[in-house]
Amino acid sequence: MSDLRSFARETERSVDQLPFEVMIAGQRRARRRRALVAAAAAVAAVLALTLTVAGLSQLRRPPIPSVPAPKPPSQLLVPTWTADDIVGHPAASIVKQLQSRSDSRTLLTVWKRCPTPTHDNDCLGQEAIAVVDGSGHQLVTMGAVTDTLSQPSRTGDGLLREVGNGLWYWAHENLGPYLLSATMSTPVPLTVLNRAVTHNYGVSSIECADQVGLCSLNVTGHTLERLAVPDLPDTRWATPTAQGCGVWGLSGAGTRTRLVIQQRDGSFASTDLPADPYSTTMAEGGPDCEVAYYQTVTPDQDQLVVSLDQGRTWQIRQTPMPQLAGYYEHQPRDRFLIPPRWQELPPMAHPLRPPGPLTPL
Image (cartoon, rainbow, N blue to C red; front, side, top):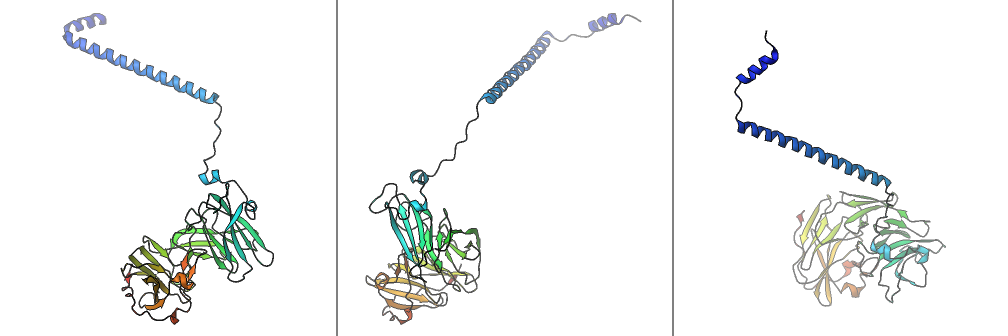
């Protein structure tokens, strides 16, 4: 047998060699592959070195102290007074005072103090609430940060309503909402159940803490539950309604208004009001669950339109302007009230037409 190396050389000479151009191209491709691999390895090495140096410098860097979240502008501008720093202070003033319906000696007073006192108290300031009774009891607690004396809003001073004998409900989101009375050592916070719940006809209603929509207040259970009402734009609901009454409201603005009325089966229906160019105002607080509104007929004369059967039939009475007749409540919120003895008012001589038929929602 011949030597293997001699056999290999003889075999190589017997195989046809590739053309020169093909060999050169293959060598060039091999060189490019080797150059790419070398470049990738160099980049990886530089990146690893950079990360290592950054990690070491981060370890040697002192920790950055945590910065507290920025405070709202109202907290930055209003001093951190306590309630005692506001109530009775020479620089503070009384912006609201409510008398208990059950005992005239029980008073709730809202005080306001401004960092820079003004003659009209219309400034950015802090409020405090004081409740006293005729037996020497007193409760002083913080109120809201407010900057105006106008109608309450979601960012205003909240809304106070007496919901028991000398017991008030403060409708506000922060602080609050809570119940307060002179005999309490501290306000009782309310648990807000914000998921809207459908109730049957007759549930009591009151303003929610954010003053949007209606809620049901459980005084003993200390809860505030949102009621499911139709979501209609520009609707003001009549509040509060007595136990056993359905809820209703006035929807729309200007001459395009309608009443939204809960029916005995719990459903809601609406009825359009006459599209005459006259102002329409709710008439609230009826003792017999009346659905009612005032409508201007002449510059000095209104008609009172009342329904006792959830909008199926209507009665129309003649009445002076509610502001002149004393049927106006300024506190805790501007409301026009229905006269307790409205049935004794004379019929309207030439009344505007009553509302149209009910339409289910």
